[in-house]
Image 1: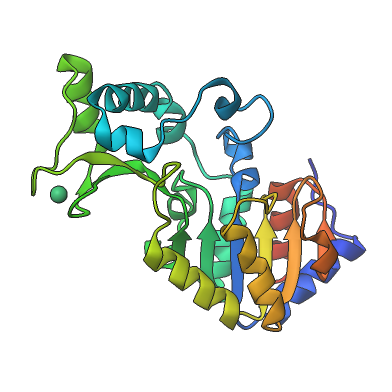
Image 2 (image 1 turned 90 degrees about the horizontal axis):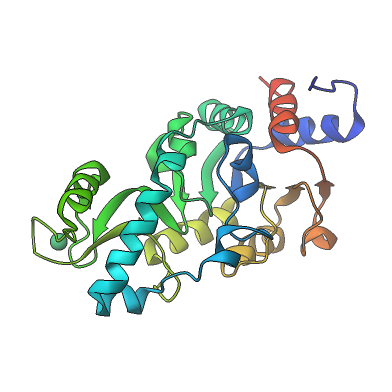
Length: 256
Ligand code: ZN
């Protein structure tokens, strides 16, 4: 698809990006579907076919942990082989230029970091599925050795540092939201002058409250999503378009 360059809505987004001194980019599943990552919450998505294993089951039941890891490694290849798309590249460019201070994401695929956004600028509200972490001490664990041991002998991983349970570093149903990430997301939303929502239907709370915080604090609110969202009514601009093309077009024309 060709990028449209004479387009009033795209021009408006370009101007907003050019004027921004401290932008936040907030992303949801829609930015990663073009990289082949399924939207788990969408109709026909995995969550309609398979009941998620919640956090309490994981902690209490070795059988649930076994089922969890089995599913995890069935979908492992789709995540590890996924590559960032034009949308991710455009977001990375905004961070590189200093336009965006923070990328707040509901995604767990690590594609913003793969696209070149330094990890310290990415705030992951739902964790990250590309590695595992100890539930006791927080130590990170690479997935490949866990996978090898699990496939070879069914071994469930425990922390080499403290013996605690090891789980993919995502936030499961029933698991507390990450306090530090939520605090940073709140602060960045309050301090920004442009809040750009990309590819999120803005229904999952507390994340969906962040655009409201930004708007109330005086930021311009722009929503780019294929479909309408619950917050369109309070947005300064809404673009219902393909994400990769639109972002690439807007960022290409908004350079210093
Ligand atoms: Zn540990």
